[in-house]
Image 1 (cartoon, rainbow, N blue to C red):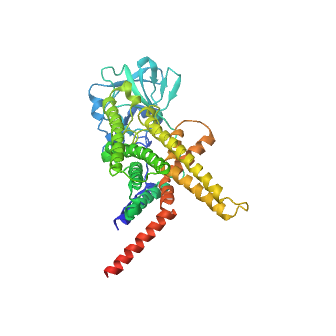
Image 2: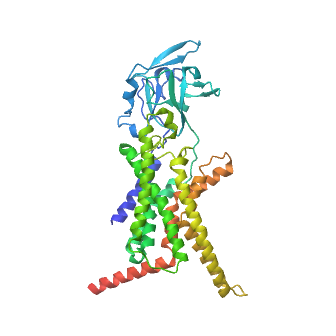
Image 3: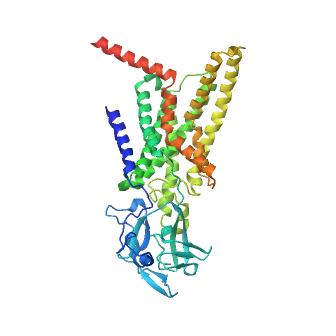
Length: 448
């Protein structure tokens, strides 16, 4: 009953996503006299100064807890008017337009002679002779007040966004399948060996990470945004480490003749997986806390709780603290996969020599299908395909590459469905499940 209620909650919550506006590019709050909807474009900046507010600092009333930083001293901006004269626009409660972060490109510090700010909100950057409209940038709340306005810090936005068709529908199905898979493994005692426990630990980490990502999209985490982001990171790292542990265990299981399990093997694996995850999480947490107000190091920030509650994985700096460690772990998985498949192919060749017949009857065809399913199952539980997610982070402006990235993301949004089919629907698991159900029914009849 509890399992059914949990699945129903997940399904209804994800259905709600279709009716919830989750576009982070929309204005979160409007503290100005005029808003985007009723102001004249030519007078917009004159009344509104756009201040970026991280998700973790958005308040229930639509304000931002960073607002007090803007009134430590008298702040003003020099605005170029239509007749090329300049006039000061002061920061005050009537001029602030609080908005959430968009997809972030970078933060830049501009000296007075490095930019021109026009009345309609457009900023002209002298360095590359480019213009940014008022929608393409915002001012950062943590200005360096000792140097403002001699140096002004702004955040440039990135507008590129790839829509993944059916992504959230696949994710909803995956979450239900993760719960179902864990339930089957808990129900069947024979599946709860050390290898099965490792698999379920990995599935559990996948479930928590994806659940937090989707709840973030549903805007259900605003009250504890940063905490949820760090929890998601911990389980995301743990999931990657568990894939590596499973790869090693499977390789050892296939190639070793000793099938005995160490009594404390799973405990050792757990300490290793969650210990490594805690170290990586500690590095990201320290970076976020120590450098958040250091504007010159801001582009290195993991940005947990800024544009989203989770980490910004698409920044180039993420290759040092997120993508890089994950790629190393999945590279280990690929090595283990190659070694395992090499041994399996050798075994297959020996079996083929015994079963191959000149007439190539159905026995050979069935055997090939079984081997192909085995290869697919091994690649799934080793997490080999996840390396493609990080490859898709490379920006290539071609249609074929965009299609490739969409397919990869669709596969991993629906990874729970794939994993459930490969693990639960195989013959051995089905036989164990039937035997468990029959044994339980027989026990109940005996008791009666």
